[in-house]
Image 1 (cartoon, helix red, strand yellow):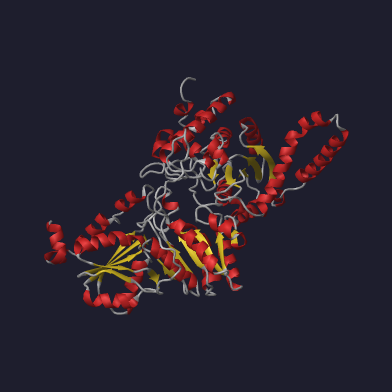
Image 2: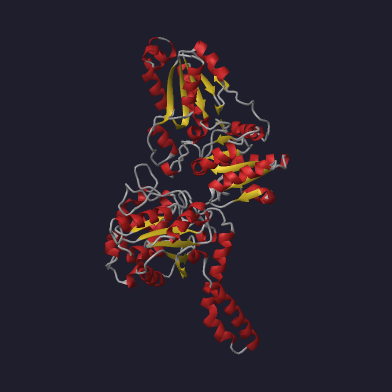
Length: 628
């Protein structure tokens, strides 16, 4: 066949019409186009290059979409998208109104389950398998999970449940010896032991030929072989949980993958297949440094990802620098991350303070309760975690930390919308779901310098605190290296005006200042969503006709709701406009583009204010502004 196979392969059914000798060409085209598309749009890269052959084999052997494929996390599904009718849309990847960077049920019938958070695949696939059985269907259900994701407790809960069932579930472990951060824990060591047996077996025949003329060395090799066989033949942990184990299999050997999948497909009961892949496969720079190429922005494939040019520090970098400085000042400080060392800015800290650094793997529930235990012994734990991932440890936040009023600081990166990663990663709910918890305090820095000082405020507080800050950079090029805290629970009047007071929580202070200057309104940097500065609110109520609250989070239960509740308690009857994100999941796309779409940039906020208070247009700066 001339031309691109991928242009012709509009569905996996067509893939299954190809001869096996053509599949290597499909894999080569997929890898080349992955490099082409991701270099143009940015996105997850190393993980997708590592699963090309596995993706081809799965769609070749299984009758998708009737057979279900559930991809854990889902950041490795670009090849899957290209083989399932979305090749022509790949240039829109992670852009507004374009393809999602993750599986999405309303995007394609081949995306059987929406994923983006770790360790959900086995549970979902088990539900599908048992559901199919209930409905009398013979479809096969497959969960593809990475070795990093397998460290999470939820994966083991699902394995435990599945192993005791009689359903036809296949769990594929994609073992690439890497999550976003280097893999940790006993499971990783165990998988290395299994891998050792595979590598020795591959070398055995060659070793016999080389060593047969050297009896002492040959005897040593035989002894090592016996030890390896004892390891491989011994029941694996997965077999003890009720699965039939197959592997390890070379995840880049298409023939072996197809043969093994075809065999496993015909077996009854829970199956576990161990596949070994290499992240970044086929693009040398990504193979050498898969972490740097985990989720790059646009790049030139011939040059690779260039070092970032010096620019304004990101909030993540500011947190990392503060953490190192505070740890140097206070030996009680310990830092915890659930497998997000790079993403949360902990690389330098982990190098300087290795004995006070704990990467617990993808285990948010454990991270929170582990921090609580450390706090019980007089240490000062700082949990560095994305806002969207704190959701996964919510019960532990309430039961193990807040109920006991333990001094744990939660540094919530990626608060607010996060851009191309979309609704699965948006940090829109942490104010709402933490504000209702007794003993919890919530801090919302509006800029980089304030973030550093408010981290100190939260750290010095004798109780649980969240400090939420956005992805990327703010407005400041230089941040002072101070550890001085800001006064607890006190807002800051940033601009005096009349008629309306804009109460800004976090990064929306910047558009509030623009609007306040244009319209002659009061602007307050609230800093705390809990406790609120009630004195400030009470004083403003005496001289203003209304409040406008602004937050980069959910309006339902958020900071604006807190202001309304406070006004009701103080019997303050002011018209209040709450601005934030409504009762819908956000789109994915560029950060600034999304703020404009949801009317939370300066222009959109101004339009909502002038629409809400038309009676104010008869006088003062609002009238002058509109007349101009």
